[in-house]
Image 1 (tube, chains in turn purple, blue):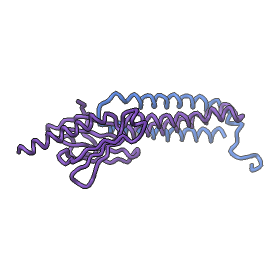
Image 2 (cartoon, one colour; image 1 turned 180 degrees about the vertical axis):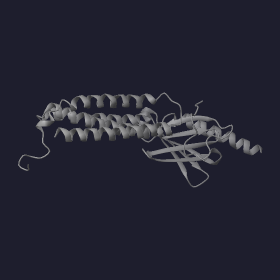
Image 3 (cartoon, one colour; image 1 turned 120 degrees about the vertical axis):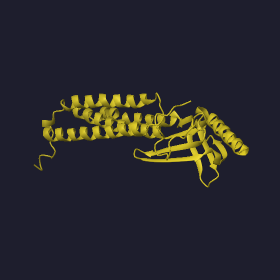
Image 4 (cartoon, helix red, strand yellow; image 1 turned 135 degrees about the vertical axis):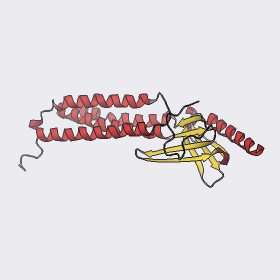
Length: 174
Length: 75
């Protein structure tokens, strides 16, 4: 069980009485690792330039350090976007917190009672090897939710379907 | 040139510091789940701190007096 240190920001009510968080999901670490690797490669440019062009050493390395500081700022933003982008599955609903950029975010939530269909997609070879993929949740409304590039696909799907089954059984009894 | 460089460098440090403050505030304000993965932001911040320190050292190594904002023909 995962405990929340605060109510999901942007969700209208926070956690309800008797509501328990069953699973919190972030994107697979590989997604952030790709960005970090790209930053690392771009960060190597000053070394190539230094060996190709005769530039004054101190000024060159000072400029390179400023350049690396900008790259680290970009990496920090990428990490914040990765880390704050998450899905919370509780025993009542799914909360989708989508961090689009540093200051842009969208929080959606829907009740498991409205879930009609759950589909698991594994879109690529890398996703197959590293075992991540998408879960598409079709609700009774027109909107379908896609939980993208997450690990533990089968576990998440099982939890969602199990909770839906429990909710439907309770509804049938009452 | 050294005076201009110093002013530009201080402006850069102030801007970068403001960015870090906003980014960290954002990370703490909107973090939902307790997790040990704060290590990653810690590592990034440690690298930032190290590079800021190195940039400070290098700034005073650069012979700013020998550089000019404008070519001598314009002056």
